[in-house]
Length: 324
Image (cartoon, rainbow, N blue to C red; front, side, top):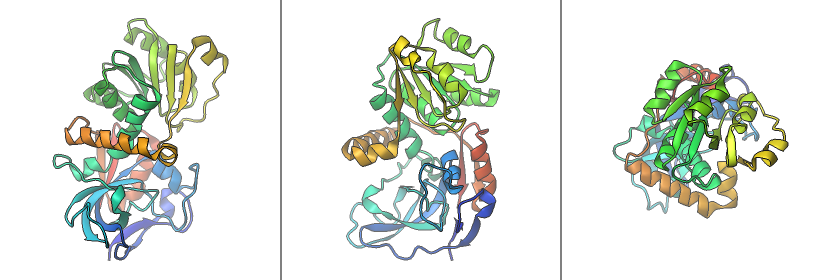
């Protein structure tokens, strides 16, 4: 019998357990997928703890992104075949050996991409591409400052920024994360938390202000980064694991700069055609091998609690993956 990580109430990783879980045959328009690898993110853990901005139904299986192999086709499915390697996504249901998914929302994994890599690809790279190409209106030659540049979306923003022709400055907290950001294509790195952090950012950009800030961190760093923006600067809010920042409203006025929210789920609901075009562009680049996520460590499914704690700590230089 296949297994899944399940809890009847939201709580810490230890409150979840491995249980038998069989999703049954797929309904019409669905496929049953044998999940091979699942990404583990900060948001996955926050959701599992019941502390995210919305609460999914209980009992709950964590996970929002994975990759696997199609086992069974539901009635009417024509875009996939048994044996196809596919990306899987959802609000929960991914820390499992198998589950059913709506076929029309699925895409095939490029032949050159491993299933472990595919498990941590779509969410981060579609978020970064939407943020920079759409919300920030990034133009080749501009400068991008990426906070948390060795994390999932931060690392993706480094690579997407380079693809869009930006000069990328990565802010990281450790030498290991600096090495990862540079390997991902960053032009320069600065040390998060340093007393002279703003001076480091300015020096890394030749004394000039920054055009775009990609901020998946929040907390005290948000205002510091905003102060480094120049005229028509754009500060992208992706998340706030370090806390919700309080930005003085005189700063956007004095700098003629903008604070911009980036929320993929809301975009998909309100402008589905635009969201689909963003997905199409990112997947086309994936097939060309343009982007390559950094995987810090893979864990067997039985070590799900350890993997969740590691993801929640934010200490890894790269993504964490559960192998089923």
